Length: 255
Image (cartoon, rainbow, N blue to C red; front, side, top):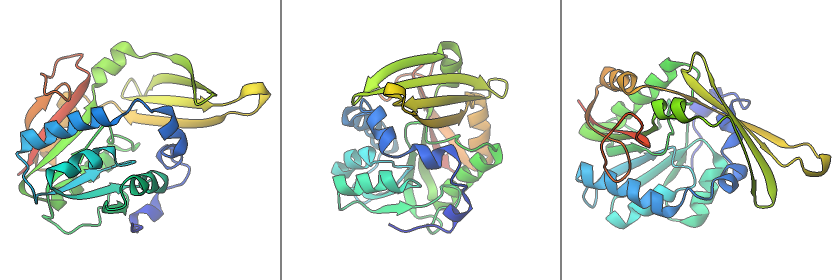
């Protein structure tokens, strides 16, 4: 694993620097291998990927999508900013090619990858739309001409319509309270996660924030970065994109 120069400019206080670690993995055990296999199947089938194609899993986390991709004989690279998640990925599969870097400055040569995948809402984390645009520009730079980009994003309209302000659960014997709210005129959703606090102890507090891009906004962002959307899906099974579909999945082509 290599450390990026880009990572030096990211403030450690930013939520994605703190949150994506062991606590994150413990809180979401339901994000399992079966779900990853379905998402990967959509990528491989729709892009027509064949053994030897070069694929980047952008924000690969603990590597569950990489593990599902491996059986297809692809040349794989996983990139993430979280050292903790990358170490988990390496432990699960020591053979993985993993890179630690900021997705706004990808440490790869131009025209390197056949396909780039951003699975499970690994986009929209920055406070500036310009930074999100920079991510897409970097994806286009490292993609081969006519290469594919799969963006797997939350359905913003569904989030707004079905937002649960608060829930409480127990995970691994620890109390977990999650509170959600819409901010910036419903242009983003924020979550506060409190873990522990039993017996009067101080809980650990983490945060998430995701920009709620509409489908129209995503189309514009992608097109402006020479990533032309060709197909849209509403779930990992390849179902249609409807107003309240579980996901918004764009398959774009480098133009």
